Image (cartoon, rainbow, N blue to C red; front, side, top):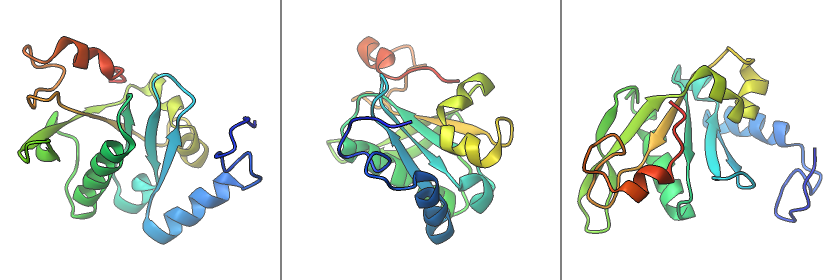
Length: 160
């Protein structure tokens, strides 16, 4: 399958599967961006085998710098031995005022794992699990908190 986006490595003739495989060999994981979906999302491939940890997915219309920071922080926590399987992992997100906020984590339902296509290619449809990373609102409240901003609650799809 190809697309017409000039920034797409697949459209430029690169073998995306080989790139992912090489990143996993070098770093223990690869990050895949899917920007042509609504909402866009990023996910990991490789955490299952390198760290015995579920893959990660973060979905929503967020600034690329925010996505990069959150995913990097989550991966650093995993590399340090932390398992992101709790509902809320405290003090992972840095808010604009410099304070820390929790990162929401929920297990992705089996029927939603197909979103992680490159992980599914690597592990098979039932050979892996994933955790959705969920960002708090500006007041550090997660979507399941009753006081969470209603618009923010709708900004992230529910994959759990």
